[in-house]
Each structure stands twice: as structure tokens, then as C-alpha cells.
Amino acid sequence: MAYATEAELTAYPVTVPTGASAALLLTRASRDVDRALLTAAYDTDTNGSPTDAGVIAALRDATCEQVAGMIAAGDITGTGAMPPTASFAIGKVSVVRGGQGAGGSSQQASKINGLWPQAWQALQAAGLTGHGPQEPWHGMG
Image (cartoon, rainbow, N blue to C red; front, side, top):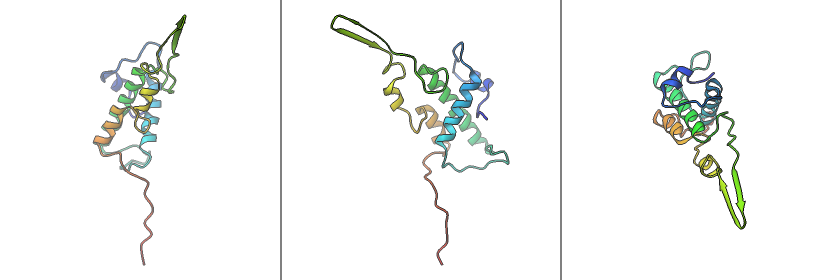
């Protein structure tokens, strides 16, 4: 289940390129958000969906921001695949275009727990990050 709808994505300042599937991008971005929140604690209903309006809004915003990051990096599939690097050589001079500036390793390195910074910040502002794994309490006798 995606944390944002296509209508919510359309209302967000994100333009999905022609040929890209907004529904697929939202689903994949929601999976990225889920992965980043493995240790977050928030109330859910019987379907596992959040019940707090602030958490719902943060998950929606993070999902839309993740889609925006994907698109800005040239990843219109949501798989992390980047456009091919264009390069050519003339004599002893080589030119490489793409890679670093078009979603290559420098942009990949800027991700936080698999999320683009704006997506991470939406979750962080809602208090959904920074929670480590919890050990069960066994009481001391």
C-alpha cells in the first residue's frame, strides 16, 4: 500500500515524466519509507496503517519527496537504476557526461538510510527517526 495517492502526488510540486507510472513510483517510494522506519513506533489500525494524522501526513510527504528525489536523479522507474552515462573521446581527451551529476554515486551517497534528504527530513520532523532496535524488557527480580 502506498502512503500517498496519485492525486496527492499531483498536488505536490512533482511532475511525473511521460512514460513513468506514478502509481508504481509511489509504491516503490513507500517501500523505501517502510525500510527507513523499521524501528519506528507509532499507533496502527488492524490493517497496519497509521492512525495519527501527523504520522499519516509525514508518511505521505516523505513518499512524495522520495518520488521527487527519484525523478530529479533520473530514476523514472523507482528501482535505483540511473540513466546510462554518455561519454566520448577525441584523441587524448575523454568526456564523461552523466554519472556524478545526473544521479550517480555523489547523489546516491547523499541519501540517508535509502531516502533522499527531503524525505528523511519529513520523517525526522514527525519524530519517526532515530529509534534503535529495542530489547524486550525482562524485569529484574
